[in-house]
Length: 280
Image (cartoon, rainbow, N blue to C red):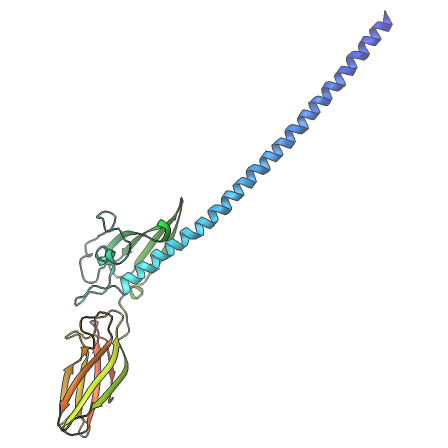
C-alpha cells in the first residue's frame, strides 16, 4: 500500500512541472508580443509624425505666402486717389488680380475707419488659393496709430499652421522714398531755325502716383546765362506710351528761340516727396 501511494505522488509531481513550464512559456510569449506591439505602435506614430512634419512645413510655406501677399497689397497695390495711403482696405476689389475669394463674409473689413484714406482702426479678412488647392486665410488688425498684426493661416491637406507678423506704422505705410529719376537727357533735334529739343527720362515710383499736382512730372526750361531771369517756363511731361500703366519713360518736345538753356526735371508723389534732376 505504501508503494502505490509513493507512485501516485510521483506521477502527480511530474504533471505539475509540465504545467508550470507551459505557464512560463505563455508568460514569456505574452511579454514578447507586448514588446513587439509596443515597438510597432511607437514606430507607426513616428512614421505618421514624420509624414505630418513634411505637410506641416508645406502649410507653413503657404502661411508665409499669405504674409508676403498682404504686405505687397498694402504697400504696392494702392488705389488711385489723393490721400490714400495703403491698399489693404481695398483688398476685396483687388481680388480680381489673384485667386482671392471676394464673397462677402469671406472677404471683407470691419471697423470705423475702413473706408478712410488711411485705412486705420480696421480688421481685414480674406482667403486665397495657391498651388495644388492649398489655401491661406489672412486676418489683419490695424490700430488707430497704424500699428497692428497680420495673421496668416496656411492649410495643406489636414494640417494648418499660422504665422503672425507685428508691424509698426512705418512698416505698412506707403513707400517713404521719392520717385526715382533715371537716364535724364536732352536730345537736340535738327531745325532750320531756333532750338528744337526732346527731353526724356525714366521716372518710376513704387505707388505709381507721380506728381502731386497733375499726375505727371514737370520739365523746367530756363536760360542758362541768367539762371531763368530772362526765360523760365515749366511744362508737363507725358508718357512715351500713353495709357500704359507700366510705362515709365516720360518725354516733352520743346521748340524755342536761339539760346543756351538748362533743363531741370522734377517728379513728386502724392505724399509730397520729390526728386529732381538739375541742369541736364
